[in-house]
Image 1: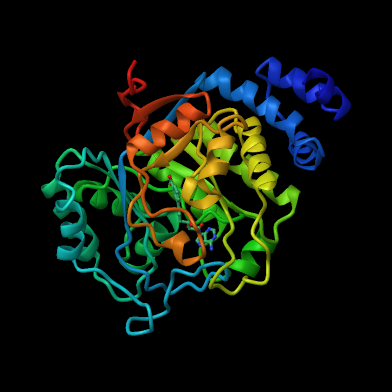
Image 2: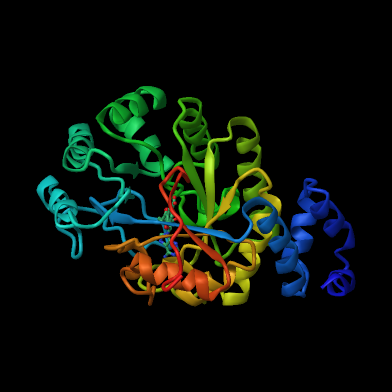
Length: 370
Ligand code: V47
């Protein structure tokens, strides 16, 4: 592999990676453009193994999507409906969501993960009572809810500062924020694909406030549509800069664009090669974010498994009940059992570790028969 890295003209980057040094904007662009995916992947694997060894994390989680009614009209979104009553619009009652959790009484769930549309009419109490009710049913559950876009929307709609809003949501049961809604930070792309949603500075400032309050979050990037390599690198380096400041991001999740049932359906989905490259370059550039997630619902189970040798060290979790990607054409199953995930990881030659949302180890499953 050293010879391949040399042939790919990446010796200087390899030296930096070896020394645990920081890569530059230009390094990032070269890594995206280098034809030899295996050379890039091998470098990312060095970084992955230095940070996480063979460990590969997953969690026992449940997705709940309270409403898909959304004021924003992002071109890539197949999930959102502009208003109540539109075909496919769906806002769940508290009881419906509580039932989703109650019917899993026998599952050792550690997390509920919730992302919603920007609903124009729901009162703030809809969210606070939802959080409180979920916690009442399962006091130990970690509520990882809302994107920074939702938080910015709530702050404006309910007339609260970000900090006040987050304090009130935390008092109701919120534990951490999801990373959704980042898309691509560059204004050129954002204007085209999600023009009526808050901008990159706002996304960053919500996460900054959450981190300053001691609340963890994750971060994402939607790739494989109209963005350039430079715009990807710019996005990653903005996340890295915030992480230098706050250390609040637990993981980065690249999200592969899915083209079905949305206004960008003429574009092809990114290939497996593209996905592996994005994961690898992310691992190399984001030297201060401990975990890189190959979200199997977004990139497919087989690619997620392969990605464990291309920089990724986390597969997300059991998921269950996901609709954002399935409405946009994801062919993945709706759920993976922890046993399925453990087997996928072992078959890839890595060591499965069940974690909670904050990466505390829940258990290190033994191989069957071991
Ligand atoms: O914000 C929507 C993206 C996100 C499409 O924080 C699409 O751990 C591709 O945020 N093609 C929601 N992507 C999912 C999300 C997430 C997923 C996994 C883990 C975490 C985490 C967060 O999905 C949205 C948007 O960026 N999205 N539509 C689409 N057609």
